[in-house]
Image (cartoon, rainbow, N blue to C red):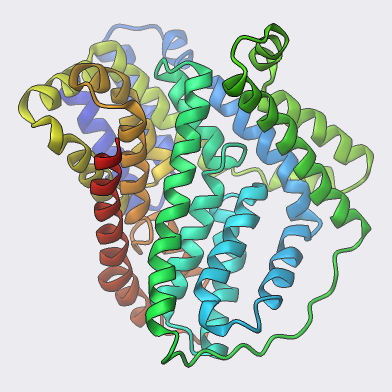
Length: 429
């Protein structure tokens, strides 16, 4: 069964990549075949493996954040922020990264930010002479880092996966905060070094026109996002700072980002900040199906002991000092062809608690290595991020040239920087 499930995961990825059909559909079919005909489970038992908590949280959070997408608030805000960087052309890569991080952190999510910021950034390259590889890295890094924020799309998914792996909610909040910090600081260092080295010979020149200001409803959308983020973040932080206060413990046990997001979605509807049908249509259904479909297959793997077997092999055959690097490399290789959210994190997060207990390593270190590794190669044109950048590039951009730049320049830079960061993080931990 272990080999069947591992083979099913690999085959789902291969079939999804070659047929361009959502990996989650294949994973669901394999879950049914292996569960019912290989393990003797009832169909209802296999259906029960659908990760309903993760599904609900992603649905609720993206539903609320979609109001600021539907009414154009985030897209207009990104234009405003880019315009304010016009007097610092040498720092444009850092500016693109910061803008993408902010917009993604405000709830737009990784794929959405790439969809509307990648074309804008590639056009900026043509107008300002900015290096295409650095520009692609900047927007990709920013979309990833912002989405990893604790209340944004990827951060919420990571916490849900940690919860499914048996990590307590307060620790999951701390671990997801560590993931965000790492994926934010690494790009700042990489892009900062590039900007400093090229400052004297920089040929970038920004010719930006003043974009339209946000209208009243768009400002209200942004304000509601900040209010919701404050509610969701303040209580867990207070609980970490004041762990013995009974009232804070009571609130922290009951604050749930999914239900709070639904409240704010209703408020947004009552304030008429967006069209309900449009907002529902913008929910990332492809991502939901992929994450939950693979999640069913992973849950079967947990039942037959795949996680325990993999953990035992790693902890007994690999030196402890090499484990974080190996985890990073495995994640990076997987992410060249597969999604971080849909495949890499659901597949590797469940092994972390057991592997940490067996090796004595800090679970935070292993969680960070998984995500840093996966996101270091996510700009590959064969992965979801790189393919989105390639697909959303303007018509006059040479696609073949851009593909080679992403694969042979951007990926090595990302993996090299991530590997170096992994070694540094391991020393710190």
